[in-house]
Image 1 (spheres, rainbow, N blue to C red):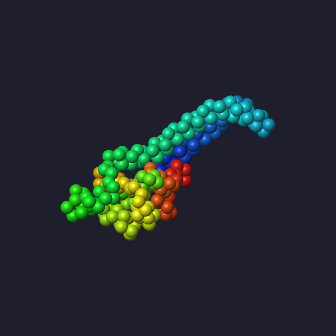
Image 2 (image 1 turned 180 degrees about the horizontal axis):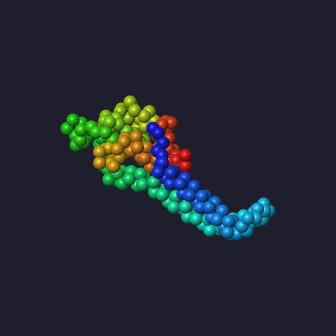
Image 3 (image 1 turned 120 degrees about the vertical axis):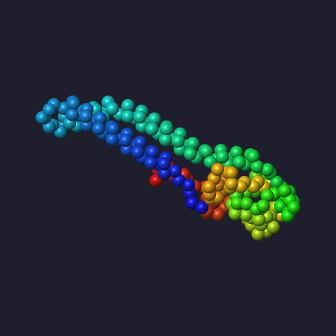
Length: 212
């Protein structure tokens, strides 16, 4: 599962910094042209006037730079927090099932709809740990975790008597177009890699790259 990047934010940041630098250079050169006597080329005078010009312009341009960085940071924060808010909203609106309830409603005449693509959140309430996974047949995949054919740590804790809940989130209607994106955001939101059962390298939370 690859890390999610934000090329638009990276391009905005690079363009803003380049524009800031160009404006500073152009204004310095224009100020030097106006300050230096015409037709006189004196390196010492050029350096002296250049330093004075830079000192005069720098406070204003540092203010511009601070504003650029603040706007950039706000955009980056919104880009990171939006998927988390979406996942929390989906999780809050989904039904929680115990494994026993899941087995009951999954039976041929149970209340669950036919198998569907999506993600699932398995939560160990005793250890406060999540396992997040994706599948094109979510019901079948969740069943495997609680019958010894899925995540070994989840099954071991289940057999040991820990209390679990299961939440099923369908890809359809979630706002996501990719199971990978859906799963990745859920893993990051629930801290399933840093604190939960998702310990494989592919589940490592991505570092969202704003500068590449």
